[in-house]
Length: 231
Image 1: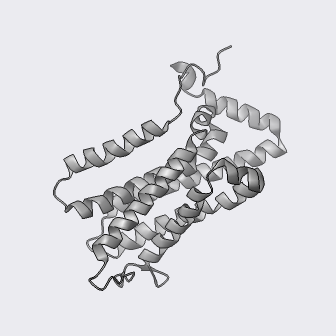
Image 2: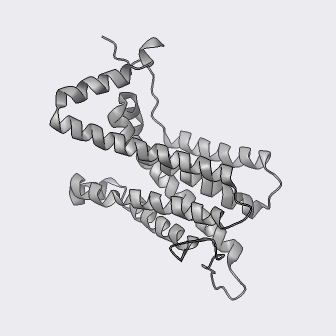
Image 3: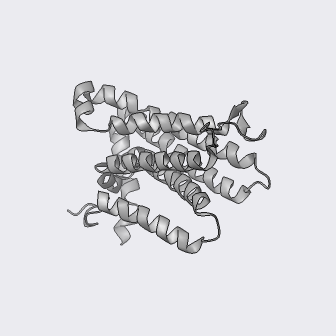
């Protein structure tokens, strides 16, 4: 019979669709927010979209374990990940362009309040970009086959550390700049919390699947059938 997730059509995000989302984000965002300087707009737009794309890319794995239709998005997650890295690299490039002095010395310092454990927020961003760069450079089939899936997956688990660095980077940046944009920060934290809940839920389901495969199957069937069977 027809499963709850069947009949939904091809919902896999293609590279063209990802590019369209990025284009709509920048052109639409500039049309709505034309007041800031263009460099400032680019810094903000790339930062926010990088965070959202990275949140989505990290969430797809555990979400697919809990909700069967999400497996359709897994196959092209690579495009989303590489696009996230490109946005992060572009963000860093624009930031460096705006803070490079005439002597070509890049300032990595921050305001006194824009630190975490006495480390400037900029260094957390540099660390996150370094991790994303390694992820992007090794996201090809050659490395998957050369290192075996298990070894490749161990390396790419570092993306979770990169995500934590991104959250710290944004938090320290905005908390240290009065007046603090609390609404923006709360929304950012809520997204990060949702990602954490998905990760923990995926790990719990994975443990249940090992200890009691029958229970895991019933939970997945119940969760996958929620609401989808009504439409």
